[in-house]
Length: 375
Image (cartoon, rainbow, N blue to C red; front, side, top):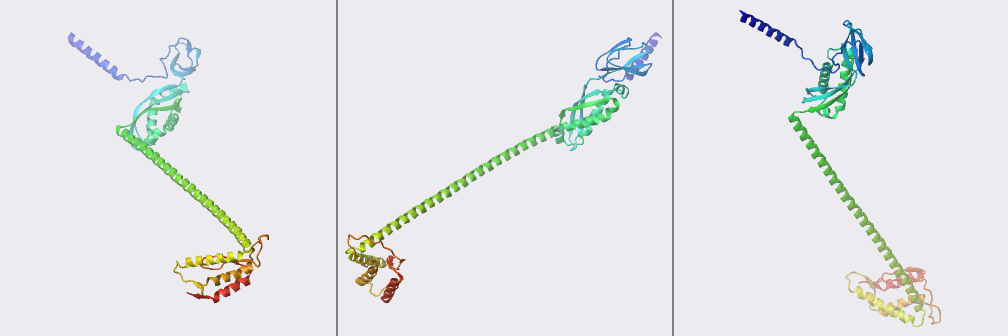
């Protein structure tokens, strides 16, 4: 009988302990309030804290930092709120981006209590509520952007999360100051794909830089060739100019020498025995001209008796009579030979002959045409 009673009491005790364990609710550590102080009538409130006092179970007032007096038994400090900036870890959670990439992300939330009354009576557990709100808001914002924008627009994502949290936490007397994404973990395949993309981008940049270097080198080579051609053309131009100047100077020198020679010849023809010297020179030139004609196969017009050298010399000397009308002595000054009309007569040796006027030229042509025939 006694053993049965002990067993019954033991069963009742086990059942009571089981009910007590099941009735206990898990509590999240509360950072906004420490253990509520007992009413000691004279209360000292620390700086940057707000104590919520209830009188007979109803909100009475908020104690400010410093000395405060309470009525024992009736007044009770119900909540203690910290007015400092508080940092809360947001646990890691999974989220899906706009381009269907599953990633795990966590962060840090910075907030401050602005209204101790709303923070005490507006929500049961402010820390738990703000953490849950931060997680859901972060998940919602990540679903609006792609994976690339998560890394590229990280600051904008943080601002969007803060704005969304402040809209909901305004009724709780809490202000979210900022939110910082701390860690982003991607799937292994996504990391491999991103690594391949980075390598491809680097190869692309290397190829672009190499092509730009080749292009610059080709441009430099082409520019060098162009400058070389310009310098060569300028050198050739200068060479032609120098050659033309040299030829002009040579022609001028020849012309001056010829003019001086003609002056000397004209002076010599007026001297004694000048006629004989002129006859000899004409005969010599005539024979030399026919020597050149014998080497060609062209058809030419010649006088009727080309072998009659004295006749040809006589005609030339008749022209000479007009050029030098009288002989001169060595004491006389050398005459200046002045030809009114310099004319060129087509002879076999391309010699130049000069006449004093047009009438003498016509007489010479008429006498030549009468004695010529076609060979």
